[in-house]
Length: 217
Image (cartoon, rainbow, N blue to C red; front, side, top):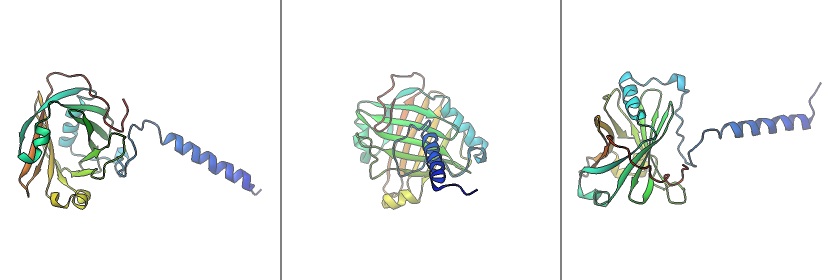
């Protein structure tokens, strides 16, 4: 027996509501033009054992906040070097995402989004305005050549970075577990000779900073 138009319409509507609701579960992230879910299903991730060990080192600090200082920099980064307070928080940890918020004094715009792809680790920078909107210069970063080190991964600028920041085509960022008490994040800009390294003290947790702009506690 043919189904009536009403029955078909109701079935389509029910499916739309179901997928809309299930798609919103466990979604902390604000709107963005970048999809943080890697291309393949979780069971198909194949990062190297070295990168998995690196991932677990960072994930072991999930939920914690740490204070930091500028370890080294060139004058291009004077504004960050002059900050009175630097803090990070490892906010969220799943099988395929580690979200680290970076706070410079009262600027809560920076987010480091570390994800797994089918073959390596990817670092993206999610930048937000105070009202939560994504900044025009955002989602830059790139993939790490595998395997790297269990304590250090380097992320080379990808095509999106070159598109929005043409002069930074040769940038690379790094996450470095320098020792058991120090975690470093930084960037090198070889073409222009600019660089900065931020070092965070893992030996003592600090009060969590406010939620990064666009995200919720």
